Length: 224
Image (tube, rainbow, N blue to C red):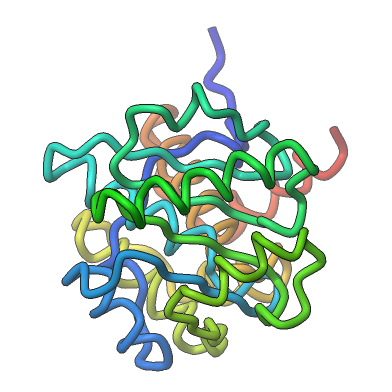
C-alpha cells in the first residue's frame, strides 16, 4: 500500500505551550500555565493562535490528571452532558454558540463560581464588549480576565517550526519553513499541522523532506 499524505486539520493532538514562541503573549501564557485565574477570556484576529492556546491549556490539564475538554463551538454542540464532569473547559469561537448552548455556558459559569471549583477558558475573534450574546451571559463573560492574543510575526512563526524540528532532531532545509509560511495558510495551528503531516509522510516513504517534495505534495493536495 502506498503511503498517503494526511492533512486532517481537525484532529486534536493538544500542542504544548512551549511550541508558542515569541514574546507578545508571554504574560497570557504565564497566567495559563500557573492557573492564576478561574475565568479567562481571550480574543484576537483569526490565525493569531487562539485555538492553539486553548488546546495547549487543555492538554496541560489532562497531563496533570484533570478532567478537561476542548470544544470548538463552530463544530461541536455545547451540552450540559458534555461538560458535566469537566474541571477544565475551553470553548473556542463562543460567538458561534446558539441560544440553548449559551444557556449551558451561563449555567456552567454559575456552577464553577458558586462551588469555587472548575476553570473556564473562552475564546472569540471579538472584544468582549462586542460579543453578540444574551445579556446575562455577556455579564458573566465580563467576570473573565481578558487578554488580546497578538499574532506571531513571520520570523516568529518560522522560528516556531524550526524549534519543533530541533526538538525532534530533524535537519530540514530552511527554505521549507519559508515556503510553508509564504505559500500555505499562515495561521500557526495550520502551519504546525501541515508540518507534522509532511514530516510523518517523509518518514513513511523513507525519503528526506526536500523543498521539491514539499511543493509536489502540496500541489497534489490542492488539486484534490
